[in-house]
Image (tube, rainbow, N blue to C red; front, side):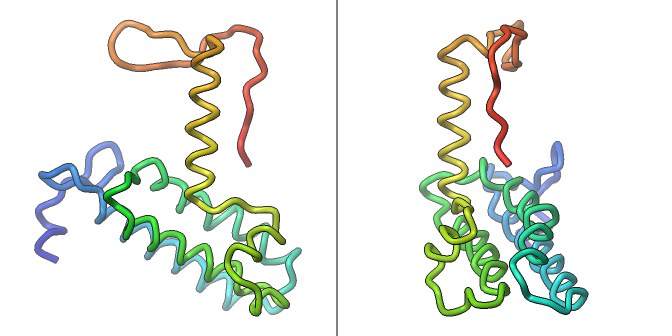
Length: 153
């Protein structure tokens, strides 16, 4: 709790004096778990067609908000958020006995880490092809080039 007071919220992110975002990941995981609990108590059926759209619409966006904050030294943050995803996929009937990777494959989902890498590759490709142009200042922004931009679901 002492570390929580030492952190400041800037642009919607909780960051401490060492620019550590672990607290943000913990809060995000807690929020995602609360949403999962609401889904569990509200949905009687555990069929794929009922749970998966709710997970993709309500839980996954919260987890993905922290995905770009990871780096190799924050392995515990990644594992914390991946655990929420494993819990969500385990809720689906007839998926409990499968491993986490097999559940994701069966549901057509990527792990959060793979999703982050996919996003990084997409942005790198778009930058290389000229979809992003250096503007004045530091920000990168899409430029209307007539190119098709990939959208990740």
